[in-house]
Image 1 (cartoon, rainbow, N blue to C red):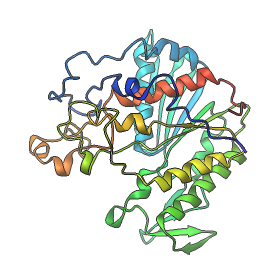
Image 2: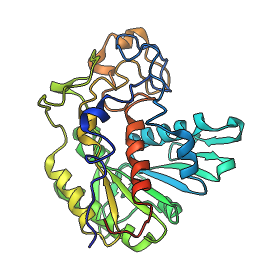
Image 3: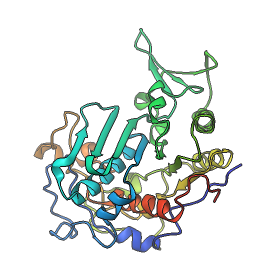
Amino acid sequence: MAPAPDAGSGYPGSDEELAAAPAPAPASDGDGERRECDVFDGSWVRDPARLDGAGALEQLRNRRVVFVGDSLNRNMWESLACILYTALPDRSRARVHHASSEHKIFRAMDYNCSVEFFWSPFLVQLETKQDRTKVLKLDQLPAMLQQVIGADVLVFNTGHWWTHTGKLRAWDHLERNGMLVKMEGEEAFSRALRTWARWVDHNVDQTRTRVFFRSVSPEHKGANWCYNQTAPIAAEEAIVPWFPKSMVSIVEGSIRSMRTPATYLNITRLSELRIDAHPSVYSINRDGKPLSLEQRRQPVVYADCSHWCLPGLPDTWNVLLLASLTRHPSSNLHL
């Protein structure tokens, strides 16, 4: 049984230090017009001391890094791709394939380095039947994830989509062992995580591949709404958690039960402090276009308090990831 080392709260800095840097910039797919926050003063360029893009390129030379999960892991993929791209001596030697919503790739050709993202918000298979009903198969991972086998670094996440209820819930039925079943959401989440853990144990060569599971990225809604926030929350302030602690325990227990060493990339607490780092109303709509002025005037409906600006907080997540790879480069080391 492998322990679940925590690569988020111990290094390379304190919560306060990590929460304060680097300052965010408007999201790359927004219109870049956020102006009410004092960190958007033109000084938000990535901190070269903390984000050594050239060093990251060398570190990831001849390596394949794959992110698997929901749009927050896509956020992290975008961040790492941008860090590497901006450090390239010759940017014409970069290739980006992002037409597919399910699989995105950044390649640094001269470094034989690729960073990929696979869309799998539940980690287990969500299947649409002929009658348009959606079935979440708790004992089966998507077939496309066979493509990630052999990667040098795997970064998984899930969580957000499991908390949706009512019309926002993505599935109509749950399936286990080929039979439709009824169970509470947390039990389904637990079974899905066990399926993922078994898949990793059976398919990942721990002498070659480092496995990470990124903790839940906090939303800032309700009592901690991100709209019009211009500074981080002070570390000593009480924060109302939105993600059930019981589900966090399920994740941590699943990681500890694995034979394959997996590092728990714990970014939750440091991210909770960055209430100011979301796109808010400077985001995009479902058509991929910047919100209109009229939409911005309806923050209750349109403010994005889930994803993060870039450059911004996901850069810090990648600092932690790269630091963990540097500190423990051997994939078969039980931490």
